[in-house]
Amino acid sequence: MITEAMVRLLVGAPLRSDGQLTIKSLAKETDLRRNKLTHKHTGLKDLFYALVNTQQIPPRPITDKEREASDKQKKDLIRVRAERESLRIKTPQMARVIHVLEVENHNLRESAERTVSSASCAVAGRGSSCLSRCRVLPPTGLSATSLGIPHAVAQNGMP
Image 1 (cartoon, rainbow, N blue to C red):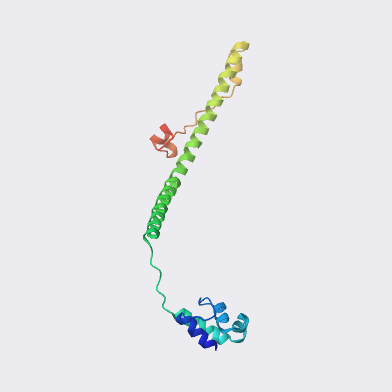
Image 2: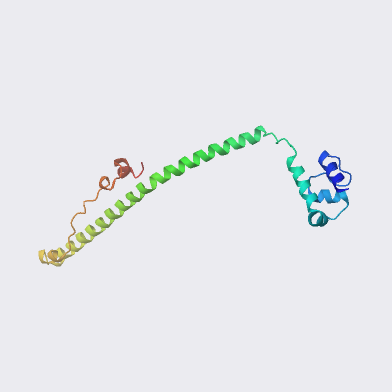
């Protein structure tokens, strides 16, 4: 009785079920509860699954639309990977540019403070005695090329 239902399902001629190759359809085909097949008749269930797995069902052919979508995704992936690599190269360069600009900004602010303080000393009439107390910073000697930044990046901010 169960084996006959298996054969009907496998040849595509079901009498009582929807014809799908599942235990649920086999149970409906045999008028048994599904748990009877899965718990009591486990050998027949395993046989059914083995027969279903050995059937030679040809794979569905890929349509032109699916092939075009796949090709587009492959091209997008190549483009995104190239963009990621470009950004990976530019990131350290930009970090060095930012560092140089921060150092230059710091030096300019300090030189502006010195200029303002020396002007206030001259206005107050203290002259050179006030200037001797002002802090003078030596030049740092940092440049874009000493940090490994290409000349074009240092001049324009962009490679």
